[in-house]
Image 1 (tube, rainbow, N blue to C red):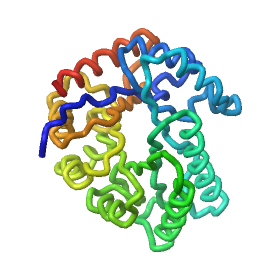
Image 2: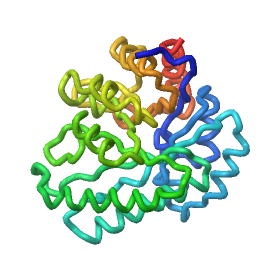
Image 3: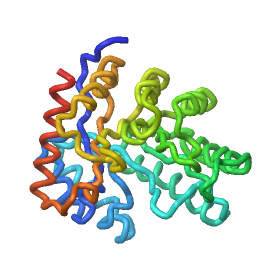
Length: 279
């Protein structure tokens, strides 16, 4: 292990500002002192207006202080491993489109979800066949693109296809073109050692980190100066991670609706905490 001499990108998911138009989202990210954003196409102002890429490019030009951008492939209502072939097909199609969107936006990383068994039962051989088809489609689409496709670990629920460190490592070994997005909350929801096993086994392919805290059954909470979260950040630092640390916070889990300024203040506090951990 070694200590990185480079600071990571401090970013936030655009979905934290779900209710705002894209220009305002960029201004809030800037006001929080963050220098990156994970852009979700499903951000309503973008998604429901036929995905106006030029508007997001204009936002990027207007905010050079937020230079780093990644993309999260669409996942709402979608499942690339669905037992329904039409649902599976459109889900794969949207994942492939997200790579093209990333290229247009100048984003270097696209985070994708692995999908899940439709029934709440352990995945079967047929589910993994569908998963292999999905991976093949991503592999083909990524060829020749200057975009990293980064697979996210899921929380350990019964129908999850990809929720253990060893399974993720096996996938990365089988697919040398593929990268890894570590979702800290999903990992913490599993066995006690899983989070640090993900870092130990997969840090060589780590392209993005979704960082948030959990409390009981509530996932994706602010870091809130948590000593446990500090240990996570230190482990990433000591493994040389210098990519995006993306605050993925579910505002519906915060007890009450927050104003835009409250959201900015929350992010600024978490960003300061992350910076302190990396110094």
